[in-house]
Length: 473
Image 1 (cartoon, rainbow, N blue to C red):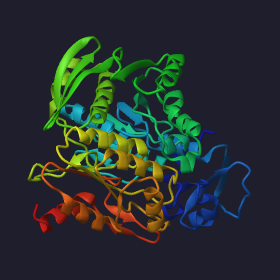
Image 2 (cartoon, rainbow, N blue to C red; image 1 turned 90 degrees about the vertical axis):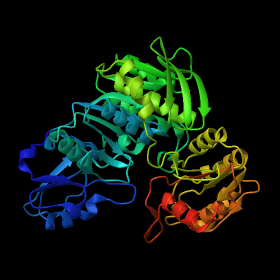
Image 3 (tube, rainbow, N blue to C red; image 1 turned 180 degrees about the vertical axis):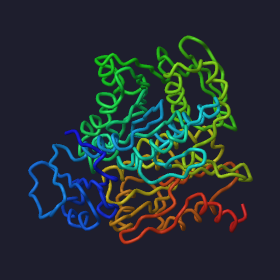
């Protein structure tokens, strides 16, 4: 339905945020039903209440009652109308792993090319002069569109944003004017929510079937089995496809790759022209994320391949994504990474092996109240690819940490189980010898550890640095 936003002073789906003259949209989520908070919204000054069609009407006095077919979609489209402004060039990235790195690499490339740009996603809003929300890959529609409006008014013309499967399925990005969309990869994750891999894939596919503009560009990983399916969808909409990967006939392809002490040297083919470039980044997956970002930047046809290639050696590592701990002595490497899926963990361990002269040590855990099926799988992966595996705690949430660890340990061989993430990090640092590499996986940039009743401040990087200060290497 069409709603006249001139009638309201604001909108939200959180009754606690309602102010005088607001529209309150009662959304039913996995854990909470917004209809249970209608009276609280009215008490706080709601002028309109929007609910799912067929909902039982409550005593709302003079407040206006609206029934809609899809409250999620209604909230997004109303937010689009209320917060009118968006950056002129928005690109969005979906996929199981690599979204955060890709959007941040795109932002870095734009900035290096002199464009006022921002990125939005798991790391929050990253834009010069702004500190944004953090903690959700794709924020709620009100936060999202108010942010787009704000940065647009502050003359940020380019934005790279993450599009999660949850955000796509729940219509949070409905109405974002996406000109180019990237797909990084597709592996197991979020099955506690999507139940099946097909449901998970279809949620991500919405970025290309519904969100990406008709005249847009799709930047797709040509190395994954899903490439043809996504390409077919794009062709049916006359959307131009830029392919990237190790596959030889990709538009942007890696011809040769050499690991070096400070990163990697690449030989690339960009639309038939050969380039040599150095990246200060570790691992093939980092190179793939950079290639996706390159495709998204080139999709605008504002810059040449020569322009973009020239700035790639200046790219920095992304916070919590194979982020090196600085100033390590004795030829030891320590990294912090967000890898929390089987594919993510396998990818970083394989990437670090070529940079490991002695032993590869991996610390990880699994989050509580999430897909239990991946726990033993991740245990097997670490046992197979790392020389030493230390199983510890991630974000236990409402589950017993010991139970989570036991499910991981069931898939391991000769792994060390340590109660408490801080204890695990200290133990690993004590084990380090010259030539060793340690990766602490699972939390990356996160600044807290989530338990059933509270969240404790916790930062992997800080804990590692503290342990190093207390232990002479």
